[in-house]
Length: 205
Image (cartoon, rainbow, N blue to C red; front, side):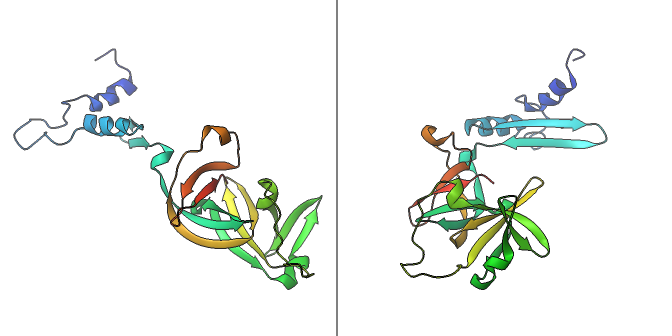
C-alpha cells in the first residue's frame, strides 16, 4: 500500500469486490460496485476515471463515444441541403428584413459584419464555407436585397453570425461519426439521420 501513488489508491475503488462498508452482511456492502460500472462503460467503448482530494471532493469523469451522443440541435437549410447546428452553440436567431439588409450588413476590411444592438458581429455564409452550389433564389425575377436568416453562434470566446437560407426546425439528434473519406473536413463534426430519413451533416461551430 505504501508504494501506491494517490491515483492508484483511488483507482482501488474499481477493484472487483471492493466495498466501503465496515462490515459486509447479506444486505450491506453488496451493491453494484464501481467495477461493474467500468466494465459496462468500457463495453460501450468509453472510459471512466476518478479523482478525489481529501476535504475537497470527488470528481468522476465518464467519456462516451460520439456515436452515443444525443444532442438538442437546430436544423438549418442551405441550398438544397439540411445541416445541423448543436444548440449549445446557438445564442439567438436573427432575421434581417429585406429593407434593412443594406443598413445592417456592412463590410469592415473586406469582412462582412452585421450590426446587432449597436455591436458589429462578423458573419459567415454557410454556402461559401462549404462551397455549396448557388441556387437561384429569385426565380428569374430581378429583385433587391432579400431577407437574411442569421444564427448567432458562440464557441469559446468567439461569436459570429452564420448566414443560412432558412431555419427548418429544432430536434434532438443521434450523432453518427463521419466516414473516413470526409474526416478531413474541419467544418463538420459528424452526421445524423433526420426523421424524414435524410442524412444531415453536423457543423462544427
